Image 1: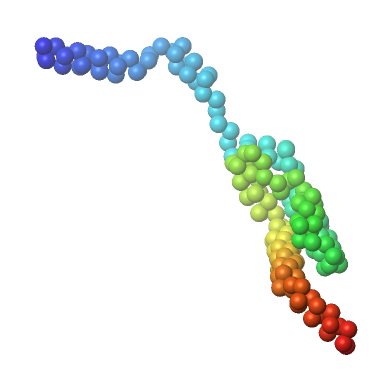
Image 2: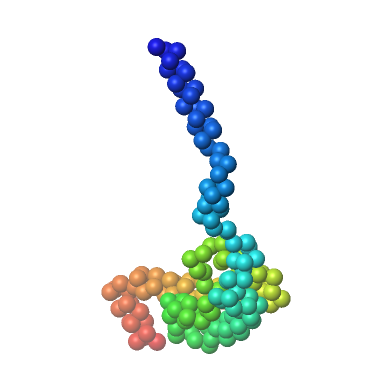
Length: 164
């Protein structure tokens, strides 16, 4: 009985192994039709450029906008960091915003990095980041100072102001 099971198992394995190899061209053709060709990196980059625009134009436009934004930060001490963040978000051109396709985003980012003005844009963006951090820290220190002043502290401050 055990010998029959062994021969049966060998027969099944042989059928499986032979059945996996198809010499029928219609089966092979159907398999090729079902598997779509993956786009190349070049094709993906072309698609990203068609959707977002030329990478170096994107860099130039964002450099101009961020340079203006940096000047506006220096001239607007009343705006909160949240207001400035909202303005910054609105100012970024769509070509710099990520999409739902990480591969295209990566290829487009690499293309942007090869632009002549990319280093200038990076520098301006770092300056914007520094100014925004300074604004956040200033707001935090003001909030901390206001929290330290309780009813008695405020009275002391008013008394000192009256006395001077």
